[in-house]
Length: 63
Image (cartoon, rainbow, N blue to C red; front, side, top):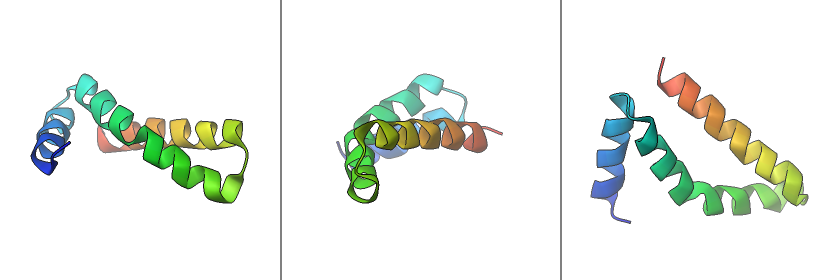
């Protein structure tokens, strides 16, 4: 996915389009999960960490 597409979705998300955040999160989820698994080593805990990060990031950025 090109940087222009990501930039466009970030702009859409910051303007209130929650579907744009889902698009971005879904795109980066595999990388975030992989990075989380390195130190955590437990798949379920790593998934929970990534999902919590996504929820907190979305909530924080839309305030």
